[in-house]
Length: 206
Image (cartoon, rainbow, N blue to C red; front, top):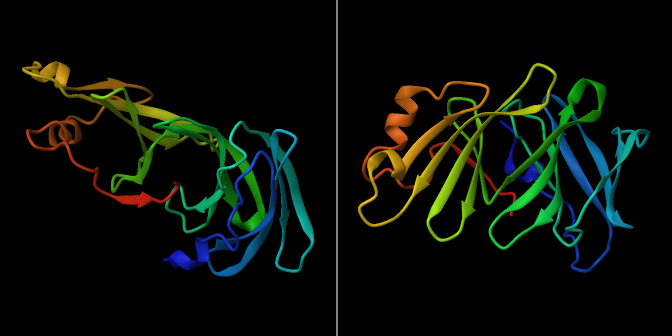
């Protein structure tokens, strides 16, 4: 299990339209961490990936409208390697991140797509769950799986609504994506009084 400190940022991102380059250390299982240099410049994140010997292995850029938010290194799939979360947009309630998964043996990162939410959780059943708020009374839990090609896919969505005398079917409903929502999971999450944080490991993206 990777220690939380190994996934932490080595420097804080200063506020402002553009930010100075920051150095991050991306932990890998059973080997030395990778070094990342990330800079917000000209409307994009510019990322350089170096191996433990300081040799550059990769560089890439990702467009952003949120250069003042710090990038994060958090394990998004439970494999023990730190994945890169680059802020793309920042709203009042939700933020969008470009997620790049680490390939530890290759000392590189690969794009997995974007994910939107306010809270992110690794569910015990193996889902990466993004919780997004809409207005005062609606919360969506979007359950994701990584496809064989590494791209993030929406498995199914659970929507909870608050309101006086809402029928049960409207107060909590599931919608299929790439998977039919598991009936036992939906039943547990839609049970009376179940409007609480999802089980699993919360990822401190914010």
